[in-house]
Length: 435
Image 1 (cartoon, rainbow, N blue to C red):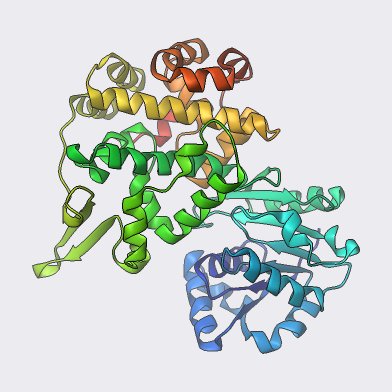
Image 2 (image 1 turned 90 degrees about the vertical axis):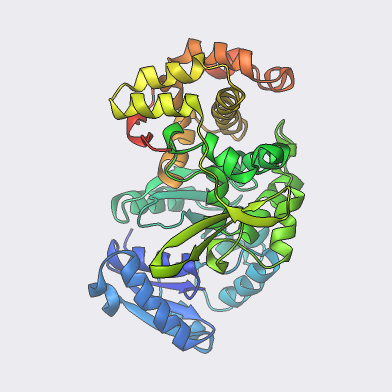
């Protein structure tokens, strides 16, 4: 597949800007960066170059506004829509694309979970064959996952060629997923994150948000604690994703996608996370440049300094990890009978089981779950976690011990674990020996 010129619509946004950088650098493409305001797009071009650590690609990045959209489309092999995650807004821009696109061109949407079939309805029957979802993860320079989502009518040869281009030219970890709400990576990741937010409310008397994040810290295999991740993503985006999943799915974990009331309160106040300077957490600069980290106290309804929790199970794990004793670290977790250690085990096992169950439900294979979580979230992947816990038989026994009867009855544990293969990922590299 030869792609020399592309148009990125919505290139002034964070994802559009970064995606433009990936095509301009790895693909050496000429990229028309289209946005509403030309000065904003010019700034986005600079950010795009910085995002891939290559100011030399600026020559490939051409800022344009919407008055020039028709010409940009006509000059491109691929048109990539990366505007706000709103079905109606995306459909409106698709109708504009449809007026100018030719049957030999490719049209992609950068949606993180909206229906591809619905969005494809804006095009002719012929162009529906050239339309599909291509979901990059943020920031794409570091998170190499790319989910390719064919629509009902997408040409299979095009899917094959585009996947090869993503893997060979753009150096993406590429997974083809079905057109289901939030696809695969976000379905697994946001279930974990939102459930952690729900547990923060349940344990608000213990500390709430930072209490749960401390239990699920870097020593459990993720680069950022789960609730803090929601702040990084943006609480408005988090809400849009979990609301969409809750409304359009009916699996056994459906209720884990209900956004907690306190999070809705924070969003209504305009505190949308890191991009707004305040969300579930807040970083405040004090005297002499010192920064203090604050967290929203659910019980009090106000921000306070983050507590430094001391959990014996976590201290034991961190000590073992520092000494390179990875197996012993998880043995200390399994043997600890504290409430915090039990909570940690439940979250880990629920993550493994949900990832495998949902991948199976939508027709994927277990290694797909590994790819999306490793390359899309930089979390220890579920199959690798099985190895960390002592293998398939041990993880199945732990699941029977810690998970509820409701979950066990729904998923078919024996059948699910028969599909488990050895992970291609080394679980050790995801574990951080720090609180």
